[in-house]
Length: 305
Ligand SMILES: Nc1ncnc2c1ncn2[C@@H]1O[C@H](COP(=O)(O)OP(=O)(O)OP(=O)(O)O)[C@@H](O)[C@H]1O
Ligand SMILES: CC(C)(CO)[C@@H](O)C(=O)[O-]
Ligand code: BAL
Image 1 (cartoon, rainbow, N blue to C red):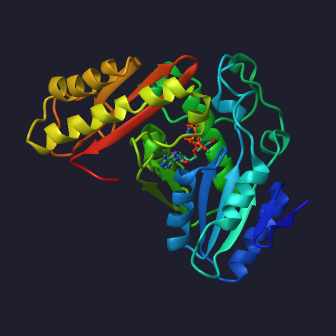
Image 2 (cartoon, rainbow, N blue to C red; image 1 turned 30 degrees about the vertical axis):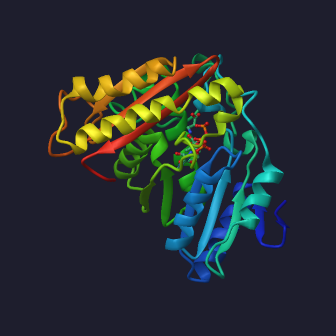
């Protein structure tokens, strides 16, 4: 049942409601900008909403913790779920006057009519896989992950039919995978990558999973970004070698006693590992663990999306 909350956010829960809403936007000649999220909204998400509102008349945010992108041992059950707060934040966002604000918060059954389990061997039904780009980096540690992301985002694109979709650079490989999916499946939309929003004090990339960090872990977490900044300084000074750029990140991350999972210098087109930054630029990215929490970050060298 759709609901107008806080007076300016329309909250929809079913595919049928979204289809009816989409038809109205079409009849009113409103362009639709879409932001996909798993909720627990923070300033990074709200920055995507701002970007969507700058470009489009009507902004829709999906809030759905997607079981298909979690492995059985991951944090699906404890992932923060804060729908009422999320709606309040969207209601309070300062957007251009007249911007229509809508939330799509479906149930798992609505999104996966055949059911969904995190046990991949037991999954049934239709899935989307972007081969090649999904296997390395994040896909190396989370082999189920991009299949789950591509599947749910393809479903959401079909349901919402946005003109523009906005994703965060923090999840850089996700942007590459989804960009390829849009191209391969001929989705009639424009995909935008929005820069990472960081803590203004210490530069840690905002992430819903930061709430898992203890105060002591939170103090150490920004050392990865400090390493990325040092690598950027080297690159700006003409250093392009993989060894030197990665060593700069490694040194800072080691000083912060981070448990590094990978540090990568990769080609922005196919995410293959590079020996040096060439004319197409490079993505310098990585993942690390702090106890049971896993965080990621990246910077772009010599190119922009
Ligand atoms: N700090 C950020 N800056 C810009 N975009 C962001 C930031 N954090 C998340 N996003 C983007 O918001 C969208 C929804 O992401 P999601 O709901 O998973 O949030 P998250 O903070 O990345 O959570 P998680 O901790 O699960 O990775 C994605 O496109 C993601 O890249
Ligand atoms: C794109 C997404 C909302 C799909 O569930 C998720 O992977 C995320 O929040 O980045
Ligand atoms: N922000 C990507 C969602 C995930 O890590 O599950």
